[in-house]
Every structure is written in C-alpha cells, then in structure tokens.
Length: 316
Image (cartoon, rainbow, N blue to C red):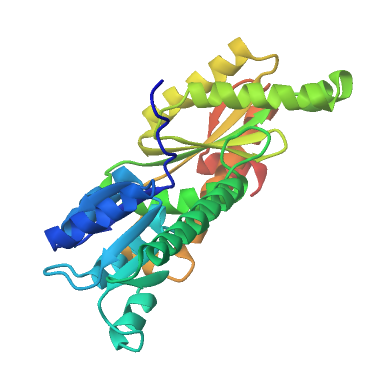
C-alpha cells in the first residue's frame, strides 16, 4: 500500500529574488502541505499570476526592478485578482515606514524573514482561508442561484467593462441580446412553479451551449435572460441571436422573443464625462428591451434589432 499523500493546504505564489531564500521558503511551505509556485521577480509574478491562480501571494518587499510593493499595486489593479491576499516577507521592524507603505498598497499581512515555521504557516493559512471565503462570496454575488448563469448585478458590471474594452481594442462593437420566454406564465399556471424552474434551467443550459466561451450570459430576472457579445458587428450579432432562438425552439418546451441593441466603440471624450459609461450601458439595455417587445408584438419566437424608427414608433 502506498503512503497517502498529504492534502494540499493551498496554492502559494512565492516571489523572491534571492535564490537561497526562495528555495528555503519553498521547502518550508511544501513540508506543511502547500503547493508552491516560485518566481524570482515582480515581472515574472505579473506575467504568470493570472494563469496560475494562487490562493495567496507571498511577496518579498525588497527586490531589484519591480519591488514587492509595486508588484502588489499592479496585481490589485487587475479586476480578477483584486481580492487575492498578499503577505509581504520582510526583514524590517514592525515600526518601519516601509511596512505601512506595503499595507497601504493592498497588502493583507506581513511576516518576518526569520519568523518561526508555525508563525509563517499560520499567517499564510489564515490568508488562504480568507481568500477562499471572499471568492465564494463573490461567486454567490455574481451567480444566479437557479440557473447558474451570471446575476443581474454582474451583467451590468460586465457590460460596463465590455463597452470600455471595445473602445480600446476593437473596431467593431458590443451587442446586448435581451431574451424573454414566450407565454411563460402559462407554463407556471398549468404545470406549476417547480416545472417552471426546470424550464428556466433548461433554457439557461441551451443558451450557454449556443454561445461562445467569451460571451457573457446571465439571467436578468423572472423569465428574462441577457447575452452580451463583444467585438461583433450587426451581421455577427444576427447570426448569434438566431442560433440561440433556434436552439431554444428545438430543445425546449418554450420559444423565446429576442431584442438586440448594438453599441459601437465609445470615444474617450464620452468616457471622461461623468456617468457617461453608465448612460451608454443603460441605453443599450433599454434599446434591447424595446426591440424584444417589438418581437413580442410581431408574433413572438423571433429576433428584432433596435432602430431609431422603432423607438419613434413606440413613443420612447
């Protein structure tokens, strides 16, 4: 019988330019059951931290080039890593102003280079637990409990990011698809709310399977769903919307009416105006909503694109 392997306590990214110190710290952590990802510089840390996805970042403060404090600042600017716990390793005394600067840069804790193994492990372990708890809370906040898609709150945040990124990186634009299940009240009234919930989960699964990995899919509320497509033109958005509509018609017991609104790249001048980004996002959702109601009015189970003429026709 083979000896049982120790349970991994967490994934630690260790960043230290001193090879001997780095190796010693790595051995101490691995002996306590941690998985260690060792990097020799702040630059290497930034190059790999998102891909390797550690539970905690253990940073030497004093390094040539990009020191620990600046590395921490840059990591914390990344939306995906804002909550990543950072523990600084230092030879400085507690009252050294560098410690305060490190904590103000986003550090969660610090530990002395000559700290005993129990102290080092306890501090690292606490930050792993805190980090994992924060991730769970974030996941709960951004996920719709019933369908597993993104929540309404996250959808608005995602739209802001996508609209802003398109301004920087794409000559095309963003499409917002608003989907509403047809005659869904009848499903609830005749089959019951439990069957209604199953229908919503099925539709959500079909939407996810009919979209790209990079598309953002969420439940807007009730029987409404939203799909956000980045870097698309009208033709691409039409193909995507029709693919979703046809998949739901084919695989689900309900059909769906879809409204589509497009937003092109937003100028920097627009983004500099107060609340300009929020205004762009709110208009995008509002226009998609109008187009969706036009699909309902035209007979349901179809895709309608927003146009200024459509807004004039409904008086909005």
